[in-house]
Image 1: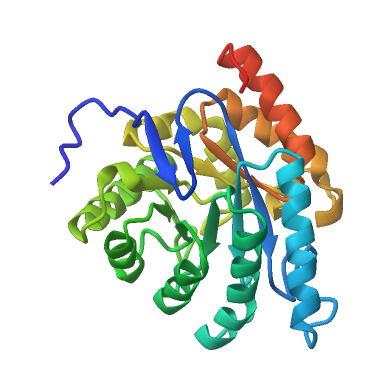
Image 2: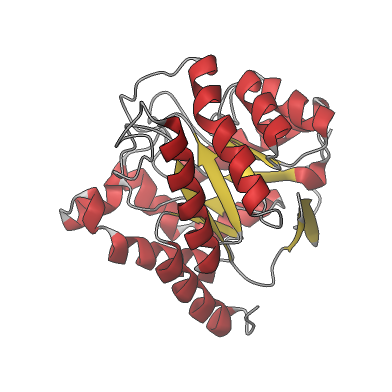
Length: 293
């Protein structure tokens, strides 16, 4: 059992595949690769010609190269949309979408850590076998612990994201933190090393726009968990509602949230537009952390 009363201290570093991430020194940027036909942001690589998987893989590798050249520290690959009302994808179809992409990117970019965004243990297993280094569970606070057990068995880090079926809260941050605490404790009980766990407050997941804005205002409170923190706000609907803009015109809003997150000490920021977000994060780090990589 984890003693929640003891002072929380973020670990100095975590090994993710070929790279060691040193927390607290600067903000890492995670590039999003959606191998889907129905991504909310319109960037799904399977959308243009789903009947030609070889072309999808080639586009994914090209996008991965571009993101790394633009400064991405890690790539997060997903084969099922998580937008509201998304079509549920069977495990075998999700595997068919992402495994060739993971295998090709791993061969092309052997020094770049790869994350797999999935809720299915079978998909996660196939992705790890193909070369993925990290599991990203958007239902990390759910009671089911298949992904935690798999992460423990394979000795890979795990991102536990906050989510709820209904956006009902009495005290938003207190409940998000409590839910994440329980998820951490369950993952440790399943065999995960505490040092291998990363948390994500789930901006846009099981939360109203007002909840999402409150979350941004109170990001520093998440450090009580003592874990590295990832945040994903890129192009999301709350940004569009505030500015009355479609997904393709939300870059400036995303950059504003990246600056806020970096200033709050968030460790990993998950984005679609890598180059611009890297620049914002680096300048914010120079001001707030007095350092740049």
